[in-house]
Length: 265
Image (cartoon, rainbow, N blue to C red; front, side, top):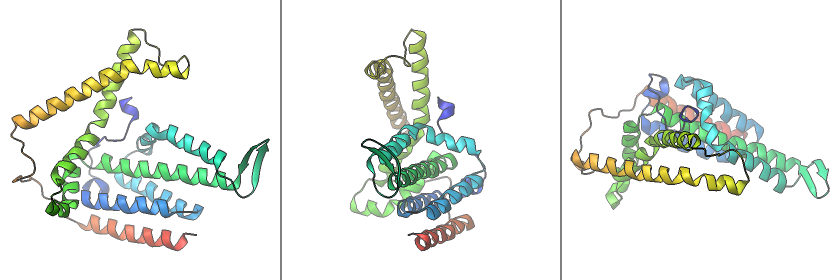
């Protein structure tokens, strides 16, 4: 299972995206997500898809590995497609059988929404694949820095988000081990009714929760034993600094926003 999950994993490298400042990547993802929701026709989605593929090339990671990030959400994507085909009406009727009809507007929305979810997942995965947890934490802390003046625990929030992302692969690996252990004991997770399959997940969920809480307690004890007291007075070995790569990302973001705004219907 761990090999099939790309979300939350970091792949060391020296590509353009690896060397870019994490603050630039975070800001660009916010802009990209906004543009994804603004896109409303085939041309704008084609531009976003082309840009996402180019970003994948800049990461120097294999396309197959990047697309693995879609595996955890494929059920949601399929459900969204079916829901829009059933519920969204309007335009030319492509198929009709009794009360059930497949209409142009439903097919269009199903395609656009599925692409929207896929693009968001892939571009977010590129962030974690090309940014180490330490850099991601510092980038989040720097971006949220102004809120610290009004009492928001910026460092704690950034640390919690970084730890949550970091432990996704660990929890996936732990889940895989539990499934194999329960299967070796005779558990069956692939047959039976839907209710029966849901009941079979209980022997997986309980050990997973126990393991997660144990890991959280061990991490807290380790941080306390090392004298961790939050972000007050902390120094860093490597300072974040913007470079020409970040300027290039800013220019690309502006051009992308202008293009989507111009071609948006």
